Image (cartoon, rainbow, N blue to C red; front, side, top):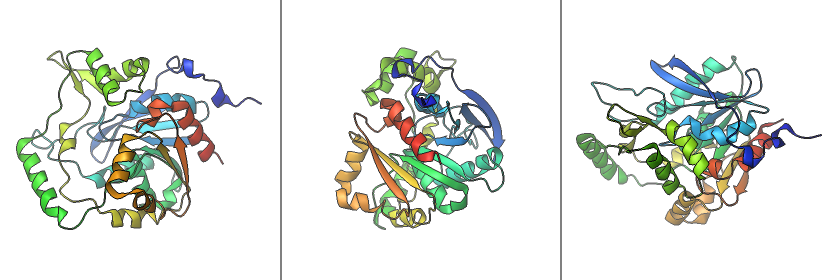
Length: 311
């Protein structure tokens, strides 16, 4: 019997319907949630990475939508979700807010006591892993796409980190605009040379928006670039990961520049040790893909997700 997920060939990747959008207010902020598939089908919650948007999952979700109801929120200050602005500007973003937003969104879209399937890429993978450790009963399966955490730090790093934060608050980061939509697509392909022109053209108007000045501005608050005032504490993150009760699929790309950076900073053995604390973890590797593996090999990633999350 033919599996319905095999019905979409790679050449048909842009010929299926776009997602549906829903806007709702949680924790006092208007959030945008993008959806694919049929309501009532088993749910997958997909969490995008830093400086990205929920539309980034289009190429994976259009395959998964044959069997799943995929829901992907835009994080606060990204995509079509509002910015938490105070006095005309947002000072900085606090990582725990992503966990609290996810917790509130799951309360809206799930029944009491319902455990969910979480898919997270990069920063979204880090959110998913922490959430699954803090709320283990809420997560049924977890797929972590290149979510590594950050390099370990020493306590003395707090001096430099707090100084960077103060400097960033004083000067205020900016994001450059682009003159045309083609320039936005070119920027996407510069970051990820494997991204096809067709996919870049599809993503560009969902990654940026034309403003009154005629230029295309990224759908992201520049305040996301402000340094966190606190150093990353790997030992704390690993303690949370050790409390994850759900099976975890950790997926890496074999040609990931982000992975090379992490391994180079601490060595392969130390890098691998951080994941050994997950009680139920398996690994998968995607060839001919970089950090944006869900763009480079979406059919492969979709199959990994489907196989892992199906009972």
